[in-house]
Length: 239
Image (tube, rainbow, N blue to C red):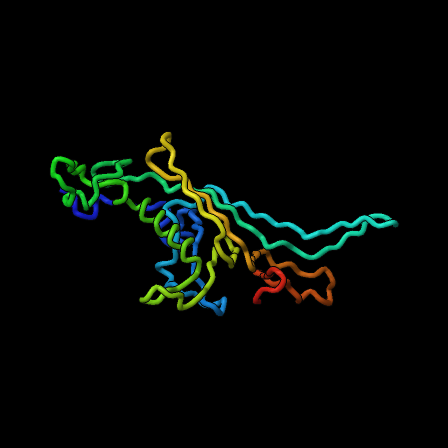
């Protein structure tokens, strides 16, 4: 007889530490940062990772350039960069339940027993898609978008307005969500398709390279750093 822990489902991505477990999985990690723009408000073990990583992450960078025609020709004004944008395309993954497999059932729910008259009640089907890991992770992502870095008190008022930080493959992006959409398709009844837009206020990348010795013999002892970093931010934002 198998023990109780034999039958269980796991997400493809389980925690931010997955990139160190040797499976070759590098998760996209979502975090909430305090108003100081540095301190994380979430412990390491509850930073948000999705059930499966986003299908695509599209980065958009654009220069702000104005052109005016004068008698002597065109004059260009260069005003720096537009705020960077990240466009996500993702899926929830399959709504898989233990013992019943893939589920696209939307009801009956726990309130079925309260329906009157009793002739309108439906028989229980042993659970719905809401009782799946994929659906729970979808609700977590939706809550992250709605709160957008805000921390609320017990009265529903915003106590702190932080930021959302996205970390992936040595890069970190601070900013806010500006769009979120959910698509439910009859051709794919066991999952949702998600789209989200993110405005980047600042970003940081860490690059790894091998040590390189300068060719000048007198400077042979000087070695470039192994892990140089560079930072970028939009004009007028906090450092």
